[in-house]
Amino acid sequence: MKHKSTLFLKELNKNMVTKEYVSWLNDHETMRYTEQRFLKHNFMTVKKYVSNVKKSKQEFLFGIFINHLKKKIHIGNIKLGPINRYHKNAYISFFIGNKEFLNMGFGTNAIKQVLIIAKKKHKLNKIYAGAYSTNKPSIKILKKNNFLLEGNFKKGVKFNKKFISHFIFGKILK
Image 1 (tube, helix red, strand yellow):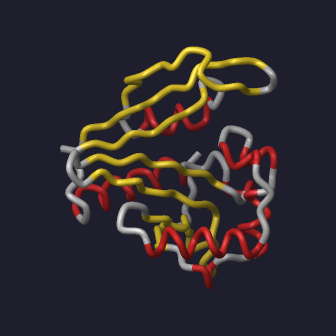
Image 2 (image 1 turned 180 degrees about the vertical axis):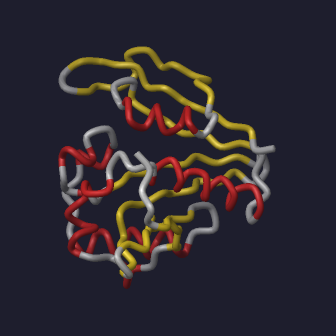
């Protein structure tokens, strides 16, 4: 379902870390398909992480924001990186943390915007994204953005006490 709110990406800095953002990282349902699920986050650890990424030349962390009812609302994050400058490629990872805005097309739109940044600003040729085989929403979003399944690491990750496939998707930027 599409939503009428305007989405934009903004590079995060430590002053943009909120209690709500930290709560997303500690929410089992939100993080169930990420390695973040094994960590306990607090305000200081998240601020330190955001500061370290901000200093990096290979990673860029963007907040996914929307203009909604005349307010700017942070609804999730998308990271570009690490970037391999020689091979002109990078990984992306993303999540919508504010559950009120799930299934509204914002993840799909955020990827479209980060792909433009990857191509125009960083001159990248290829983008990769990983997804657990059980992560149907992310797989759907990647396919909507014309990512192709390029790798299947069968029984490569443990999820809910079972070994499942870890997929790698790729997209050549034209």
